[in-house]
Image (cartoon, rainbow, N blue to C red; front, side, top):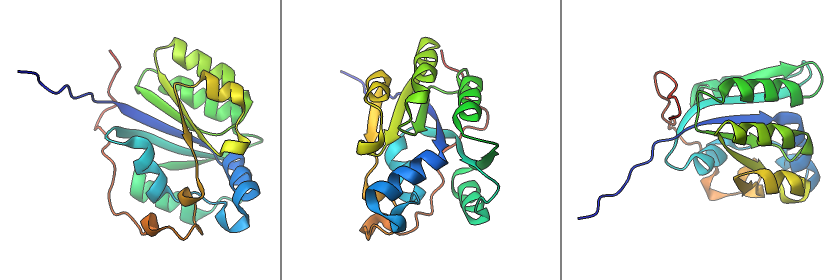
Length: 179
């Protein structure tokens, strides 16, 4: 008798907000520059548990509605960055490497290639989610998996799945360690 093997993974989602917003606006127009997390996060997680979701964004004008929504729905947070998100996101990813199995980076920026290589060297699965025409090929090549961010992952996409999802992805009470 064969038994089905259940794999339990914890995931951190780290978002380079300025990169993703610019990519979405350029590709799909100003009305579609904001990510619909109710659609995207469940698609990225599958059956895996969410450990952290952090939206890094340059500047002081960060929507309190976004911060409140990410906190309420996904236990997430928004971090203001002095300049670009590259360094703060990389530091947080390195800090989380021992606490999660997978890190998903929402950005197509080739500046993250060395981070991806480092995390993989530490035994972390690294997945990239970005807009097809706004992602460096070298970043896609280095990642363990690439998710194509589509217009249906944005607000303003007139997609039937855009209704609010009132579910909170599972988050372990204490971060699970990789074995």
